[in-house]
Image (cartoon, rainbow, N blue to C red; front, top):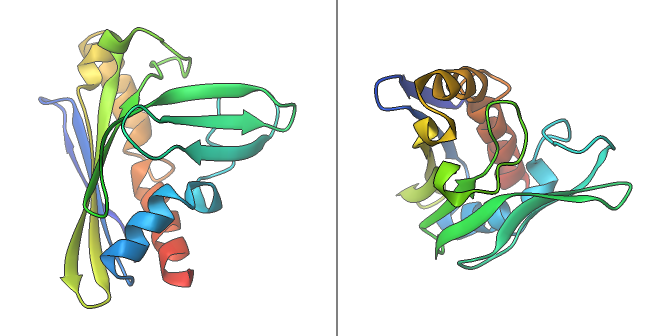
Length: 166
């Protein structure tokens, strides 16, 4: 299914939505437990090729990359974990696509799952507080990137395909 998006420059928020042909429990499981199966291989920070993208379950879990040379890079942490309806992640990647370990500079990604029918689930992503990465100019730079087809809309389409194939 095609992902849709809404961009709000005033609020420094990017929203994207996709409806997947899968029950809510499967959609949540594919998003969380099978994160590596649909995460784009080119979406990484390390120099070496991506070996694995990991989303650890539960509040305090990390979401991170491991490259083929064994290096790990933590993108953020799990702030809320409410299967199968909701999860919130911190995003500790700045406008230069580098890790910023200061939690005060992290934006948030809220992912919600809503049943639309017996085998249909609507998945909404709200990437918010982008101004925390260094003010309005930094927020706009990040928004431009994550709202492009290579950003959340394209990522959600990959997720939808994986959910429907699972």
